[in-house]
Image 1 (cartoon, each protein chain N blue to C red):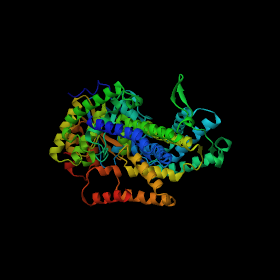
Image 2 (image 1 turned 30 degrees about the vertical axis):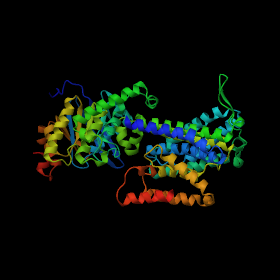
Image 3 (image 1 turned 180 degrees about the vertical axis):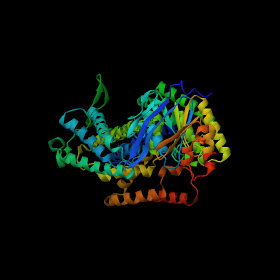
Image 4 (image 1 turned 120 degrees about the horizontal axis):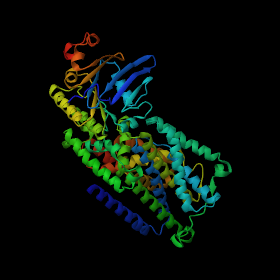
Length: 266
Length: 335
């Protein structure tokens, strides 16, 4: 099941990544690699630089130094939509949605990258544009089914409860056909049953051949789901390894000192 | 599918009404036909503003593009001796081109900042044309523009010389054609993938980027369509009035175009058209109030935003409670 870490070439290489905001070093010389088919998690206390890391990988902001290499090519200097076109797609927390769109419209919008008709072709409704639309509809149904959103397909996003919004966020990202799916705190605010369901969902996504990278606070879920974990603290990577290795790492324990044991999952 | 069919039906019904019934009823009144022509041209321009609304931008610069269109057409016809039928698309395309160049810079701005910079654009273009020397004619503008001549293809006369027929009716049909074509253009745009992309830009730019949407490109497409419609409307105006001045379209007009959109309803392609026709015709009927036009527009704008945020067209949907009855009140006052 788990790919052999030493022989497979990595999908994503983060190399000496640094990002400064004025005097603050949000991400400081962080390196790690994500292998294809892995579930890789970045954890860390608040302000550790996890979100900045996400933005750097998704090309939303540029690193001060260092490199992000995806499938052997650098993503640095690309626009976010170009990174997405390469297969790096992120989700946002659930407030970032298309409020006025229905579930179906949202997923069809997110199907943008798969549309092969040009803008002009779409305008004139060419055969290719109609094929795109048909394919978008079909794929959207499939994704709604995977995320169990079929019964809210005609509901506007602003009227959906929080749990659905998170699923909607993942549905959007899946419609963009990512190779690397980056999930921003997918388990935040969930009760244990919801978390269980979400963990199963993330596994199903991985089983479709999509590499998953998480930023997460919920340690229980993280320990259960992750193949490997990197721990950030004050912008630096202080540990990397399997959940077991992380749980026993003295640096990690120190970083979380003063926090509930429960939160660490040990 | 059904929705599309009913919309198409409504469109055809409107086209028949507008192309057959209205000219028959008002055939004896060149004045009425003129008011309709003006309303239609203003609708085309306002439709452009509506398109910029779909990407979440309040465009108060449409007067600039109408002015550019009007002057490009006037210069093409009077200085270069081109036919109106060439000058018209050229005016639209030049406006769209200027829109793309400016849009590259200003479309990064959002909200009130975009609105502010487009207001200054209305004024800047007016001043540029005022100081355009012999090319634009300065404060006196360009007058004596000949009416559109004959349009023929391989000896086949498609459109007769406007001077040789009932000119008022000819302009009426030209404006009707431009209006119907613009509606079709915008409607098709919104029904295609582009419409969804525009809506996504309005509701979450970052999210759209993360889904692989090139937001710069689609913002420019929307804005250039908007400017194109502004230019076409301006060119029609120059031809119909046979003159164009730097003061033909000013900041106040830009604001009126947005008001048309708000009044009709931002959610509907027909919104700006309903708004433009209602207000233009109303002010023709209420001659004596002409001097209070700006005041009435201002009050109307405030009123709509407070009581009827989705515009008049939203009233066909059943509304309940206090807000609904307030909305109905507003329409009654208007009728």
